[in-house]
Length: 91
Image (cartoon, rainbow, N blue to C red; front, side, top):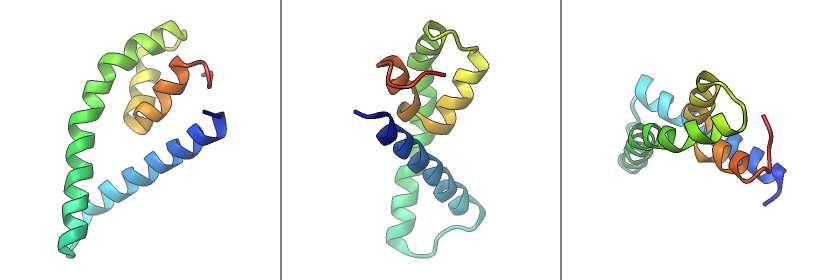
């Protein structure tokens, strides 16, 4: 996969954060949208901490601090650490 695609996916991840935070601040009234929000929220709440188990080692191997790795994993999830592991991006 090309670097530009991964950066596009990272931007999508930030859009997901906007969606989640918006739903926290002002809960969605639409039943379907609320269901989608709940699915995304639960996936991120449980998924990102699990991703940290993988990303800490990947970040360390790339010479990054644990703090930087945690922040980037929480912000971008696998769209950051997977291309880093595959040497598509460098940080």
